[in-house]
Length: 410
Image 1 (tube, rainbow, N blue to C red):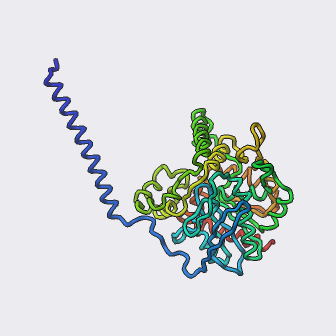
Image 2 (tube, one colour):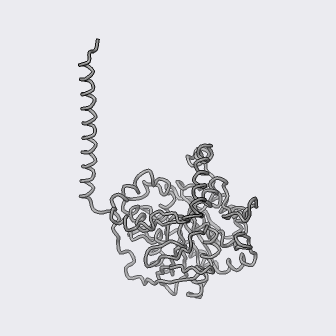
Image 3 (cartoon, rainbow, N blue to C red):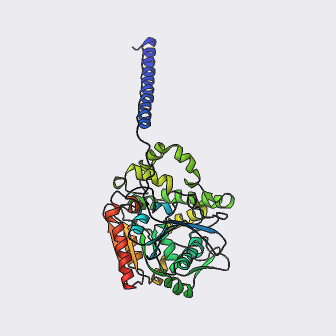
């Protein structure tokens, strides 16, 4: 029969094992820290623009905000506007990384490249005004996009080509549908704006920009949203963002924390290589230097209203206006009006992106454009269409060739 002494021995033995485990964990952590401190700092900037002429421009929106743009000036070339996605800024196209910079690539091809930052986004000296942060994606299409397109046209005297990644592509769809506000916050499609806005651009390309969110039946994102628990989680977050919109509508990501990030680049590198970043890009298609640079330069804050609009589109499928025009009213549905688009347009998506099938079905197959193309890039996710290891050979030439093809036809 076990004695009291036997129990005390077992307790002491268990306590010793726990102490040994704790010491081993601390030692392992310390070793990783020491090794990390001896590795070169990740994400160090590289000079990629060389002798290209760089200019800073400001355009004012109809609601009084100043947007700031960077320009790689080639006055003889066709103007190309590069618009960023949700939670990002223009530097996603313009990272200080050799071979990962679409803006520089296109500028060296002879195009006149313009990099805007939507309201509230950017890095000094290209930070755009935010106003009161009570804006949605509708405001970007109704106010920011016209200011950008008209500004570039006024400066160059030429029609521009629009390239939109993710939300930047959605803003294009909304802009080309002639979206405007009526009676406050009601979004309507103005036929005269549909015509005039098409006339101001000579072509476009969108990258990872579905107007409808749908996934294959076995996709984990679909399962998460379709399960009742997943839907409840999304609805709970929407409720939180709706409350936040009333008191503090700015949702901090990394845009306002850049000083902190720069002080801890190894931590940022670790996060960008962790499963936390799996939804942003296909990690095997990227390297740690570039993803660290993306976090330091290309991530930015958003508004609570933008979050609600995005999450509603995940639950409902279609991209709709936010907020609804009135309680119980049917909000304007951008996905249902893709047929209004007739501009030459190239739909680009990745095999590992959120919803490549939706880009084809509800983008390429839904617009009325006579000149249109679709491509699904093998092995590419969402943001790595801009920053992947082989974008300079796999992606950038596709975009440049499409612009030249559209130029030849127009």
